[in-house]
Image (cartoon, rainbow, N blue to C red):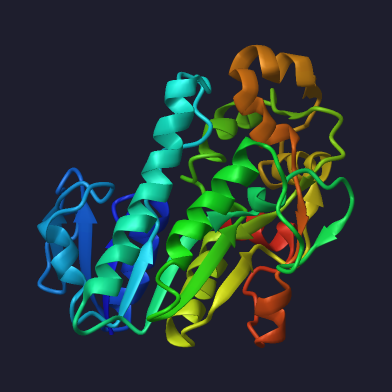
Length: 300
């Protein structure tokens, strides 16, 4: 299989490309930096900005699949959600999906499937309600972002299969949301946040890759929740992380503290969803790490 990817140099993209290469696939990576971290014949890197139209779009012709993982980091302590930051977060996702869909529509030889990233934030806050792929979207910033992101990708649905991978918190030692927590937890200074009862929909990196490969190989259509079958509360997550690191979990960051530190971006950690991978389970996918304990034991 020949796969064209955006976001290939990021945390998730690198893991997916490694899996593709291990099974003998070829990859073309569209990257603003043009950085080639692979340096092998099976990977071609095109330096281009995928949010803008350009010659790079011609690389879609003849590939078997397209994967869109591009997007600015949503939560960053140094970048609060100003109007400009929100616009950058939105453009990095929506415009990339739109340009890829345009390229697919214009290609003489089209890919069989277009797998485009999204997030479980699509559903917005729903308390303790269990959410499958058929649940409606929310109405906060992150939910509206996901709706626009998916909508841009869906414009290719007239000419190819479009799979929308709504991803939860991906767990790995170097994961962008997990890695910053580890120094505090290893010092015994880790803790929960908010009231601790919000639901944390997570997935081990190996199962994230497995589900994206499922979407590619089966040319799935529509939304696919990329989460483990057993979501946990924030308190359960932080307790499990402390147990995996053999450290106590003694502290709690109140919601007001998070808002002082992150501003509106704290919503990404406070407005959570209890999401289950109904379609993946129905398709017979077997999770390597279905429980948080198994996932953290493997990582640490």
